[in-house]
Image (cartoon, rainbow, N blue to C red):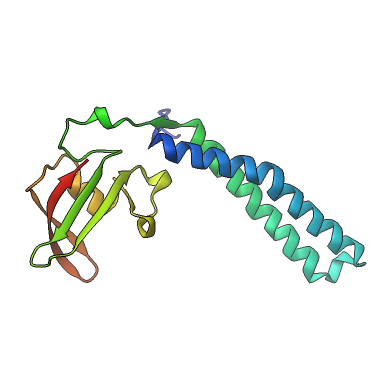
Length: 160
């Protein structure tokens, strides 16, 4: 990095395992599949005007970029532990249940580092507006989150 400091990437043990598994898959199966597509496209003849060959080469470039990205994330990953935060307090690796003020529905999220965030699967980043607002809060606390649609208020109903 420009200032000489390396940014660590907080990640859960499960998240690190998922990245390692994806990396292994891409290095083996992914590369083999792309190499096969390139070979098949070359077999079709002149590669100068071969859309299949161009597409396969683009897939190869994307695959190699993703492999490099995963290698960097894994290299700088620091596994977070639930005990890094006091019991009942929201922190990395903790599950938090919230409800929007005035509504009965409860949503539960796992607070994770940005490397493994996936909101549709209930994993929100500590760097997201919601994640930043939740950090270090406790059951009963209310948070305010600015969204493109306006300001939302939530109450924390459980922390595991």
